Amino acid sequence: MNIADEISMYRMHCLTGLGRTMLPTGFWGESSDTIGSANHLGGKNLFLTFDDGPNPHTTAQLLEVLAEENVQATFFVIGSEVERYPDLVAKIANGGHTLGNHSFNHNFLPGLPTKIIENEIHRTNSIIEDISGIRTKFFRPPYGIIDHRGAFFLKEAAMTIVYWGCVPEDWRQVGSSAVTKRVLRKLEAGTLIVLHEGAEIADQTVESTRAIIHSAKAQGYTFKTLAEASSPMFNQILPESF
Picture (cartoon, rainbow, N blue to C red):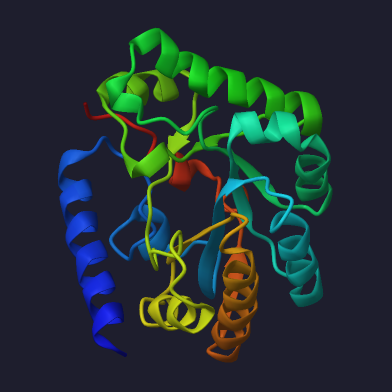
């Protein structure tokens, strides 16, 4: 690994440690989490997730790769993008993948009034359900940060906060090789992989997704969606502490 990769991984390690200490309870996808340590699905399971879609430059290609590899993933979609590309959301659902809520406008939620935070979540839930027929149970906050007001609303809505596990900082153009290497170094049973959609990083995301799947399978890992992991055991990590 080069120095840029080492710095990226150290930075995310520090941010994860800080987040686990300061943020409301949620799923982090690390071995210390209930679902990761219990491994109740059997085998070496990974959770592959994509943020910021649907996107016309990435979503369809990702769905093709996932279909070719017989892998299921979780897509955390932005409500305003769902309105623009409802056909892509339908394709995600029809492919058997899980849909998660990533807010409506991808704003920094702690800086917003409570009513707007609630609307960001509720409005996105409604449009996802209208298009797919699926009532999502999962919410990933924009920039990975949510305060106690948002956590309380999510608890009332019986939704689980999903944070980040392995994040290769792929929202920037770092190259598919770097993304792949950063992810593969963090793999263990229960790892939550976070990749991003977007026009400028389309090739990087698609290529690294394929490479990560191939390498993980070769190491004996299998991929599950968060919906497949939704069980009484998983529900124990619904936000409780504020």
